[in-house]
Image (tube, rainbow, N blue to C red; front, top):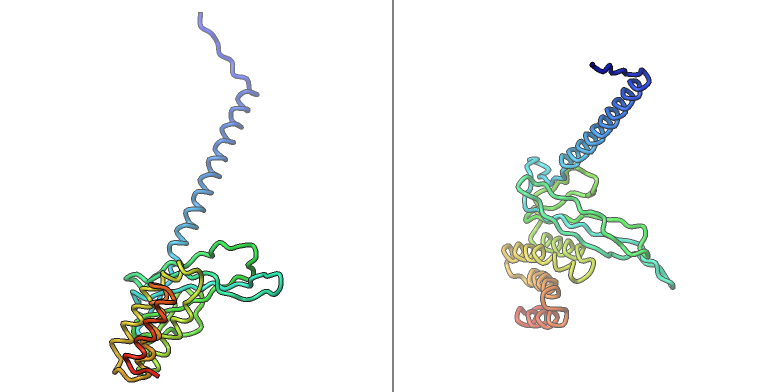
Length: 225
């Protein structure tokens, strides 16, 4: 004797509602995953780039230094100080990764950042904005001593943060020194600039005391007043 299975309308309706609810949840999850994927893809496509302003060609090997400043709260008097530096370099396509906002102590506020660019034989065109998708540089045809003074000023702008953070600047400083040394005709103003640049490198490598001693020794050897 066969059994007759009876399906009640109410039970069928509940099952349909359950299935529809699950489908809606799956659709929501798929849409959310799609949205996240699009955001990530958009982030990857939004690469920052450094290029030659005249040729629009990428400039690989360009150093991109991000310097972070903030108001530092103090009981007696607050001050505006530099507290962090980040060093990156462009790849073969002239692209570089943007620096993230560093973690900071609660006594820091009004945090701002600025960019400093260095590439051999080039000068960055101001203003430099972190929001810009493309930063541009132009070949620097300034006289040697003016170019050297410009490079010294760039190096001074980069000095920021703890000593450990500043050591990341050593390759940049050495590259600047090599460019200066390759173009100098050993005049006294140029020798002074070379000595000052080497001093900045020595501070990070051997400490200020030894750096000062070597700086004075070079002054005497090179006849710098």
